Length: 71
Image 1 (tube, one colour):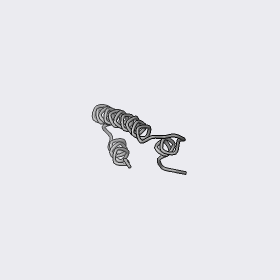
Image 2: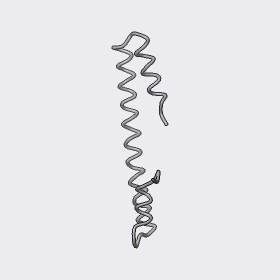
Image 3: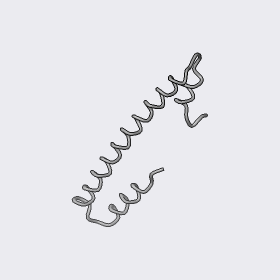
C-alpha cells in the first residue's frame, strides 16, 4: 500500500495531466494547513486546561508527553 494514495490516484488516472496532479497536491496542502491550525488550537486549549484545572503532576506530565508525540 502506498503512503501517498491520493497523489498516486491523481498521477495514475487515465488522461491525467500535471495540472490534475498539481490541483490534488494543492488540495492536500490546504487540508494539511487546516489540520495544523486545528492542532495548534487544541494544544493551546489543552495548555489552558492543564494550567487552570489540573494542578497535580501526573496529568500535567501526561499532557506534555502527548504533545511531544508528534510525528
